[in-house]
Length: 409
Image (cartoon, rainbow, N blue to C red; front, side, top):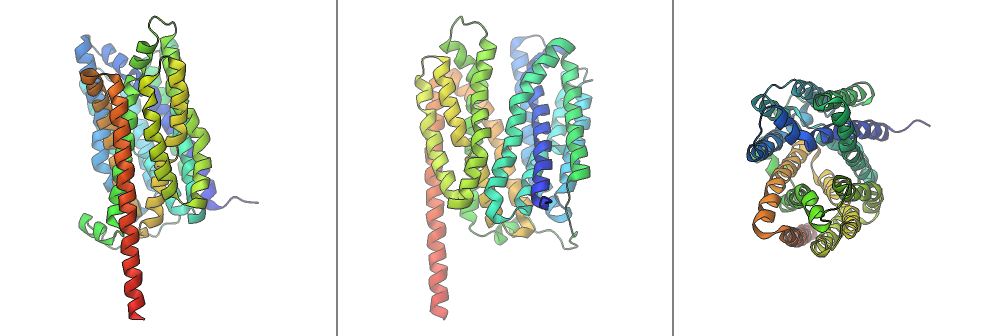
């Protein structure tokens, strides 16, 4: 029996997301070493350039994501997959031949303009999947990116160690080319290009039902990414504090980081299927609350293995957040502006990634690492309250509309 189109496309873009995440995650951990290889030798300068070069892509992507979403609504989602995968393939290939940090910085800026394979795949799956299966499909899709992010640093480390850092960029370029070819030949989409002028930003919000709930979803995406990325850069430092003088510190740090990702791979499809049964809003609220709770004991652990267990539990919780948000956006967004609304949500995610990577390090330096966990937990609890309040306002408005309709009968 042939697979339905939406499911076949899901498996293709799952592979594309896996290849993209595996490739890009090979590069990020070694950027400081590559910057040093390009002639920057002072530690403070390496740190400054690392922050600039890392953040450049996400900052630019945050601004252009709504534009790509707008074009996806007009011309289809497949062209966005092809544009992103081929564009990133070429830019990453050029990074292998950068001669100085200015060239690398410029290429990372351009990367921010052309990137967006995983966001485009989310829009494709969200718009093609029947509503009764959207939670499972978006949860399953998220495991592709997470799995790639787990494997990428390992492969990148081996390649960098034995064959040189420049080959890591070439390998990433090949993976992105694979994502391009898979999307080109196997993703099927029927698109009727609209001759109508695309709605302006003001018109998009006028067409959007329950604007407050959408804003709550965008804020939640931003806060969750901010929370995750504020912790991510300092995990290795925290493991070192918990295990002074321990051998194989890098391996131990890798296990701690991987624990959350592994848990999310396991939990995302399960929570996605559950959201199809009980609703994504309930999954989102419970996941936010559980995530906020799990961050607190991480500040009180006494060894790396306790931290690993808590990070695994954290991964189980966070697996339900972003797929639930994507499902809510998909179910509530008018079809004509789905891509644009997803574009705004992706902008929030990119800004959260950028803000978290800057905030966590500064807060840890000023107040200590433990306070990063406390502040992150507090932000998530506030966010959960915001979601509940927005939900109550939506229900109140719906009751008023029903009452008005009843009065007209």
